[in-house]
Each structure stands twice: as structure tokens, then as C-alpha cells.
Amino acid sequence: MRQTLSSFILLLTLAACGGPSQDHAKTEEKKEAAATTGSAYTIDTTATSVQWRATHKGGFAPRFGNIKVADGSLNIENGTLTGGSFEVNMNTLVTDPASVTEKDKKSTELDKHLKSPDFFDVAKYPNAKFVITGVAPYDSVKGKSLLAGATHLISGNLTLKDSTLNITFPAQIAVNENDVTANAKFVIDRTAWGINYKTEGSPENWMISKEIEIGFQLKAVK
Image 1 (cartoon, rainbow, N blue to C red):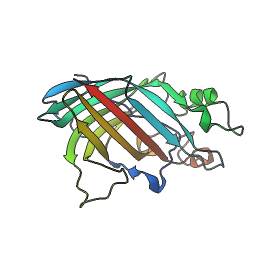
Image 2 (tube, rainbow, N blue to C red; image 1 turned 45 degrees about the horizontal axis):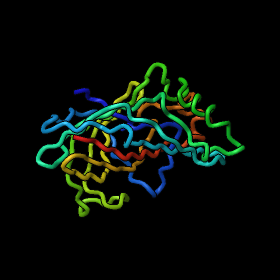
Image 3 (cartoon, helix red, strand yellow; image 1 turned 180 degrees about the vertical axis):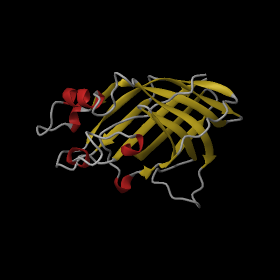
Image 4 (cartoon, rainbow, N blue to C red; image 1 turned 90 degrees about the vertical axis):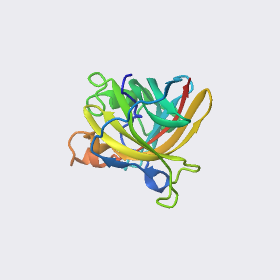
């Protein structure tokens, strides 16, 4: 099975609206993928969505948009998620026109910029990947999640461009007889993956928040 994903993840760019409204994903070094035991459920790409949200310090409104999951699968054993992966097609990254004001460029021009070597260099790195490395029950005693109804902590290797790091975040997971759903919303620091505009200390890069908000609603079918 392909060990991929998207951006879980996925995904994203510029900066994201972190703030106190979403959980900040714990970020660590790359880890070994979880064993894919149990039955494989195929990601339903038509019923799966990934969103990104970014902010700019120059008075621009937050940018947000969507990106499509290309493929993937989740493994279920005894009614529990054990592993899986999915891949995001970075060529499908789009900015929601509702987030672009007259002060901004047209959303299509912003999309081109995000896909350029200034950010994701999609021509060279067309996919983002997420591979599950661990799944644990969410313990509200050990930590408080801002995701209402969080049931699990998911850990996985997120690959953006040529960098892979492990992230951990709360999620809602529901396993049914014929399908699995997983929902999450969290924040990552883009600079941890080496995503900088111009140079790391440049004014242009400073104007873009380091935080990217990622949200996803996954559905996989048996």
C-alpha cells in the first residue's frame, strides 16, 4: 500500500490563522509508519476535503481555500483505526475568492504564486503526504483539545516539499461497518518544513504568519 498522504495533508501555505481557536500540532522528527493491520478502507476522494487558512500581517484579510486528496486508505482492525495514509495533489490548491479583497491580487494569481518556487514549488513537488505512525485514545485528563468531541490523538509523518516531520493532533474518528470518518483542525509552523518566502529573516517572510491552519474531513469506505 502506498504510504502517502496529504497534507494529511494537507497542505497549505502562506501562513495560517493559528490563534487560540485551534490546536497546535506537536511537531517532532520523522517516525516509523504504523503497521497496516486489519482491513483497508479506501479514501472516498469525492466525500473528503482539506482546507487551509493563512494570515498576513500587512492588513490583508485571512486567505483560505481548499485542496483535493488524490488517494489513500485507512486500516481498521477490531473496530479501531490502526494506520493508513493519503496523498494530496498540490496542483489542486485553490484560494476561495471570498477571502480575496480588492487590496489583494485575484485569487487565481495568488494560487499561481503559492504553487511557484516561492512557496510549494508544485512543479517539482506535486504531492503532499501524510502517513499515520500512531493512534491513541484521546485523554481529556492529560490535555484539553479545542476540537469539540475529540476522540483520538493521531500522529503521522507529514511531507511538504522535500521535508518530512511527525505531527500529533486531536481528531474525531468514527468507525462504522462500511465506512470510517475522521475530522480534525490544527495549526502547524510552515518554517519547520523550510517553507519561507524569499529568505527566513526577510521582511517579506516576516509579514506572513508562520502558522498555517489545516482542517480535514476524511471518509473511507470498505
